[in-house]
Length: 393
Image (cartoon, rainbow, N blue to C red; front, side):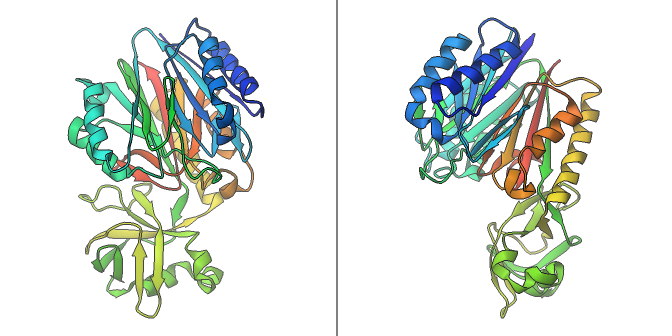
């Protein structure tokens, strides 16, 4: 039987916050000792972090602790942004195995990390495993990391996010056991008789129909549908945004196929990538991604109302997959460009999740990027929310 509970605290005193969050988690789990504890924390708690470990271990009865820093944390009770926050998940199961890990140092060793994870995963198949990755966003290359996982493991569903912080430290932090470090990959392998249903909600929605890149080199797009790329961009955004291109690039992005073999950019089947430069006179766009001639694309807009609608649709699909069951555990990795910065008020995503799926143990944090399966493979995602719901078979 899977037993899980979560708790969070906004108390500024670290030891008190750890006690409040861990106690709530254990009370909700309703079990004896936990087999594993997942901890997400803001950097406000770093100076006294040993107190977090001591308190969490004492209350949960385990030293199997894993987690990372986040610019904000969340549970089913809401989201904490811009202030001290600490969230704790306590988990135990008679049948599901939990394998926490830490790979250090990470810099320029992302693909090597895939080999280490293959040794950890052993013979577990994709239908029996879920890999939770929490890499340092400042030193890691998430695409290489995912390539390394696929090369050594084959396809195993991955969820997670880039560890983050509020900009005061210039580094993010990864935790496993009694080790707190940076420039690392922490995470968790879940394996055994469970089902994971993963949904991805896009914060950026199409404002153009599908188009074809007809001339390109590297990350530069020269022509779209045989017209200068910038001209096509300008027709798509129009209005006030076109008068301030710097501001426009904070709201308008490119959507590229999640599966380049199928070369589709249908609803939800696209990867959002930043437009990092424009050259109106030469008609060129530069993306934060290499492109190829013949590749389909759309322009997307970061918009609060469209994001709410997409979140609602994703949760409806998740509810249908569950077939009336309530999730026993949920992980939600939210982009740091969502939350208050997108909606103007806090707590929207978790409120929608709770309204659609009921009250269940949910934990997550706001990351610098997200990781999740889309179009038949695992991808680096941006401006998304990745929701993994876990139920026993």
